[in-house]
Amino acid sequence: MPAEPERLPTEPIEMARALQLLREGTLTVHGLLPWSSNYTFAVTASDGELECLAVYKPRRGERPLWDFPRGTLCLREVAAFQVSDALGWNLVPPTVLREGPQGIGSLQFYVDVNPEEHYFTFRDECGEAARRIAAFDVVINNADRKSGHILRDSVGHAWCIDHGVSFHEEDKLRTVVWDFTGQSLPDNLRDDLGRLRKQLGGGTPLTQALSQLLSKGEMAAMRRRLDRLLHAGVYPAPSSHWPSVPWPPV
Image (cartoon, rainbow, N blue to C red):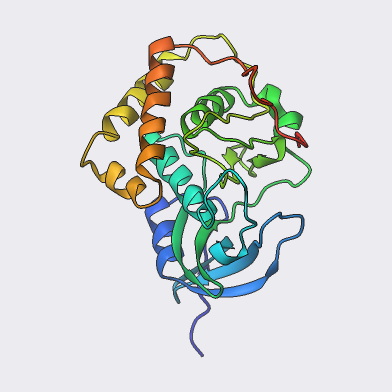
C-alpha cells in the first residue's frame, strides 16, 4: 500500500511549501463551513507527500454586494495575503487563487485556533501584532475587521482572516482595532511600510501580481493610503462620514 501523506502542521511554518501545496495539491471537499455569508468550504489539499486543511471560497458562491464589483471577493482575499507577505508581518495565512471543485476561488491554509478566542478576549496580550493589524487594515482599506476575524493559534500567534471586502477605491475602513488612534507608528513598522511603498512602484513583481487581482483605481488608492499614513506618521482616527466599526463587532 502507498504510504499515507505526511500531515502538514496547521501553523504554516514553511511558507513556500504551504503555497506549493495549496497551488498544486488535489482538493477533497469536506463540506460547507457554517455561519459564512458566502459559500465557504473546508477542504483537504494533498500532493501525495503532504496534506493540509484549507478554506476554499469559490467565486460562484459570493453574495453580490452593492459597493464591490461582482466576483472579486476571492481576488481580494489573495491580495491581502500578498500585501501581508510583502510586509513580512505574517498576518494572513498563505492564500492562493486556483481552480477548485466549484470553479475559481481563493484557497487559504487553515490555521488551527481556539474557537473561543478572538481579538476582544486577548487584545491586552496582542501587543505588537495589534499595532501591525491596525496599520495593515489602513493600507488594505478593510471594510469589515471584526473581532472574530483576528484569531490566535496554539503558539500564541495572531492571524487575520476574511479580507473579501478590502481594497475599495473609496475610504471604507471599518474595524474594531481603534486602540492606537493618534499614536505614532513604531519606527520598525514605518520602515516596513516604506519598503512596501517602494515595492508598489511600476513594474515590480508585487505590482504585477496585485494588478492581476485589483483594478488600476484600487492600486492607485492603496498607494495614496500608504502615502498618507507614512506622511502623517500616526494611526488615523475613525471617520465621521461612515460607520467606523463593523456590525456585529464580533
